[in-house]
Structure formats: C-alpha cells, structure tokens
Length: 248
Image (cartoon, rainbow, N blue to C red; front, side):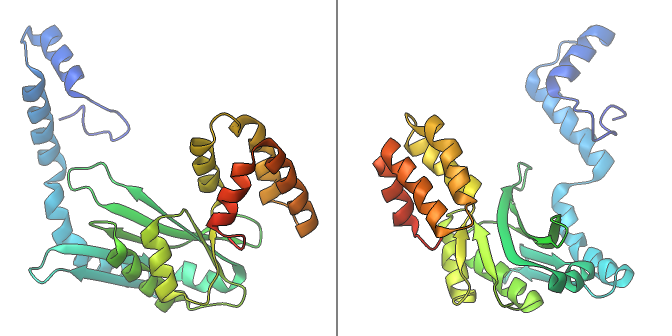
C-alpha cells in the first residue's frame, strides 16, 4: 500500500512480482499481483463505484465554497449515474470578455467504469486558453452531447459572432444543429489535418505546410492561392475539403 500512495508513481503488477521474488522469494502469477494491487487501491481510496454516490455532496460543497457556479446531475430512472455538468462562476463571469469561439472536445477515461470527459474552452483577450464548462457522461452519443450543449447554452447564452469549433464527430454536429441552429460550426484544423493525413498518405508531407498556412490565411485571395497550390499537388484534397463545407 505504501508504494501505491503516491499517484505520480506507477506500481504495476510486474513490479509487484519482481519485489516479492526479490524480497521474499515468493513467485506470484500476474493475476494474483493484479488482484492484490486492486485490493490495496480499494483500502487506500475506496471503491471507484462508491464515489458516484458522493457527487451530490461534492456539487453542494462546490456551490457552498465557490458561490455562483452552474451544476447539473442527471440520473436514470433507477438512480444510476448518467451525466454531471459544472461551469464555475469565474468562467461564467469572464465569458463576456473572451473571444466568442467555443472549442469542444472529449476525452475517454481508461478507468474501470469508463465514461468520457467533455470540455469547452475559449480564448481570452490575452490569447490564453479560458475554460468554460466540463461534463462527465457515462456514454458518448447524440443524447449526451445534446444534454451537454443545452446546459452550455443555458449557462452562457448566445453571443454575436459566436462559433463552435470541434472535430467531425457526428453526434456533436447533430447536437449543435439542434441547440445552436444559427451558430456557425467550424472544424478544428488539427483534427481536419489528421483526417487528411490518413486519407492522402503519399502527398501529406508536401501538403502539410500549405494546409496550415491556408487555414490561417486572413484574406480570401491568399486562401485561394494556397488552395490552388494544394490542388496542383493533389486535386483530391480540394474536393475532400469542399465536401466538408467551404464555410467550415
């Protein structure tokens, strides 16, 4: 247990096998090492499933200590966890001073209970990343993304010149079309480049510098100039980008 107490140190089953062999001359198979590690984690931190029962208390204390946040906790009919949403007051207050571009992303958990962390951020006037809201959902689908955007819209409303930036996840596109029908939805250039890189492997090295220069062009004339150069290298790329949508 004392070797698992520091979260920065990774004490793997292989290391447990090694230490028992060295210190006690005991041969332990991998599964026994893994189970002993899980049991020690349970004694140190409790069961991960039990932490879901503490969410209401956590949200209450968050609102008590840091007044003004927006929190939502959604459960199924039988009381199981579905979604939790948090937007801190400092983020809500600072939104009006930020650029009205909302960047959306999701990150999958690799824990026992899986789930996904949904995040939104923007950029302040100094060019720094400014977090807006977070949510944890038990599964990523049309319903969870729509629930997330409904809460985001309820917290921050809609500003003039606002746009949403994300990858091309189908559920994100569907949800924003329902919740933000009048707000432009743009594709993140880094995600878009990864799609191009996978599709056009032979020409991707030559296209890469032109693509990022084109994506950051400030005039339509410059944009078209770089697009023509890309087209000369591989005409399929232009067609692929226009199929995604010129406006995006």
